[in-house]
Length: 85
Length: 85
Length: 165
Length: 165
Image (tube, rainbow over all chains, first blue to last red; front, top):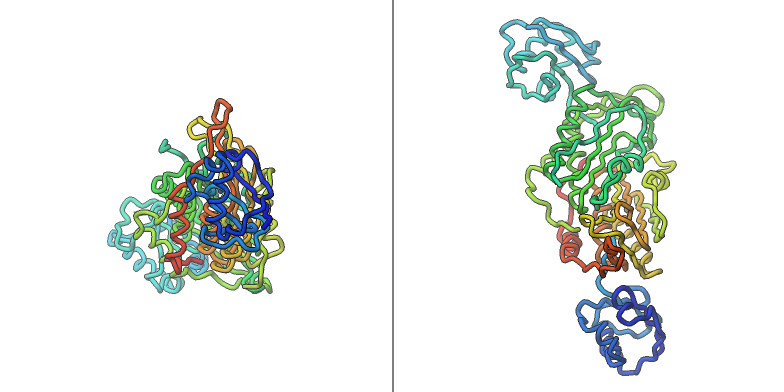
């Protein structure tokens, strides 16, 4: 499954890129699976995503819980807790 | 005791005057006494002040309860409940 | 933070500009985080009204507004407060009253403006007379019990339930 | 009253003018009685900061703001709602965010603007980075538990304690 990943704030800075296209293996079913998979891709991913409980994820620009399936996702956003307003 | 009375809203309209100077008898001690005294001055006072419980009074431009003494008053305002804002 | 600060109080027949009044309050300051404004507008009650006529007690109106403003500044540790009330004939859609509260954090600014409006409604000496669509006077607006309840809730609450930044 | 109404949502780098935004919301209307605005401003934290830098998730930021605005319109029967959030570098004293809520009566306008701010803080995809007075980046502002509490109070309250006119 091909998906576009977009990163924001310190997740973006630690990965040193704002976005990328990835081809995900069949075994990646949920948001949690995705985060676990990303952490195998290199040290920068491990650092950026080490505190998984604070990492927020959006599927097709809508907030998603870590146990949600990513089936149908065209774009997945990964970012820290929001601090706007 | 000489005092300036100022009237507002429907109290003013029913009395048909915005203000007047009155010389009050010694027996007028409290706000309630004043309202009772005014009602002896004519039919228009009786009409304007008939629902005494809704009439609000200010002594020297500060809200006053009906049982408060009027000693020291230079100006007494008499008006209905406020509806600004 | 709690330097003695003077609220801006005005009773006027002219309209006001929200941005200009906010600018006056925040000019040259870099410690204000939240500004809440409340504007009360004249409604036509489904087309029934052509205007509201606002009468006030000159002198006492300003004094009461100042008293309420000072209570709010003290209670909510506000950094600035403005209260402007218009008088005279006001057409539907026009402004009647403006309250601005400034504070470092948002809840105090909301509470400050809300508190001032509740007390202003019940104790500032202003009265509204309605003018019907046909033009003639329809009589004085009666005071509402709901306004007394809105004011009285402030004596029950000692602190606000949530305080965000 | 509950005709389906579209909130005004904008994410922009430019500043906004309160009075102009309120005028857009109330133009030609004579049924609005109360307008509450909230502006969030950049503070310098006692001189420690030279700027905040606001990053956002384009597309999702607008979508979340719209979702929150529609929840507020429905919940408080609002007559109008505007939410504007700036991005980019913002100096102390400058505006960051504006929320405007309009309704026939005052408490709904206060509650509507307050509700939108609480949800916007915790779920609209914006992030703040601090720039020190010296100029270099000081790092990202951490999320506050107080903001989660402020949001969560809205799920406990079914109705507001007082409703004035």
